[in-house]
Image 1 (cartoon, rainbow, N blue to C red):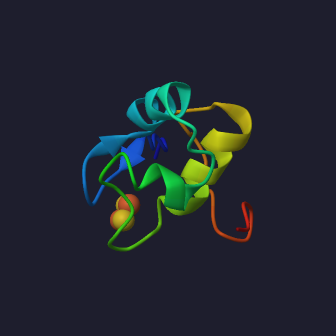
Image 2 (cartoon, rainbow, N blue to C red):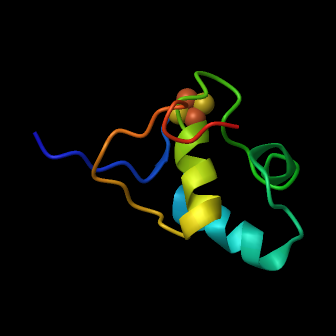
Length: 72
Ligand code: FES
């Protein structure tokens, strides 16, 4: 099964949208991004992906990324 993860699935906010927020604000952490966009308040499985997006600008993932892979 192909893995294709591109958003916070609980809130429907895409990582591409969050990357745009990064470009237009001073947000550099998950918590700071949450001041500007609604995501990540439920299961929090998207947090490691958002941290990787912040680090690498990648917005579509074809692998599982866990908190162990992208610690806070
Ligand atoms: S996928 Fe983002 S809070 Fe659940």
